[in-house]
Image (cartoon, rainbow, N blue to C red; front, side, top):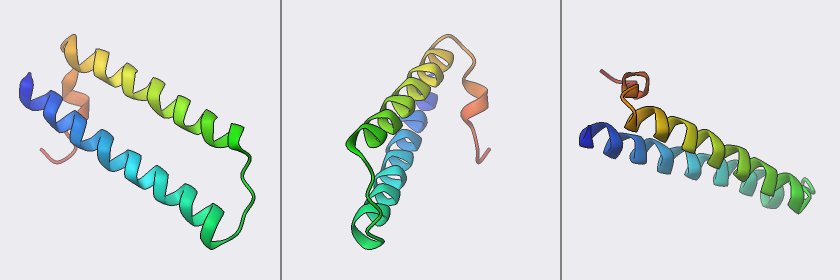
Length: 69
């Protein structure tokens, strides 16, 4: 179980970095004006999905998170 939680946290960090980079590219590189509320909603949705998968992992349904095995 500890291994699945550690892998889950690694995946969460990678997805958070990807989301941050996408927001950065849209705002700073392409100059697309994104309202702060849109960015806040994206992060809230991401946090809710993370909580959902974390509860699923802790309660025993962690097999859906093994992408490379």
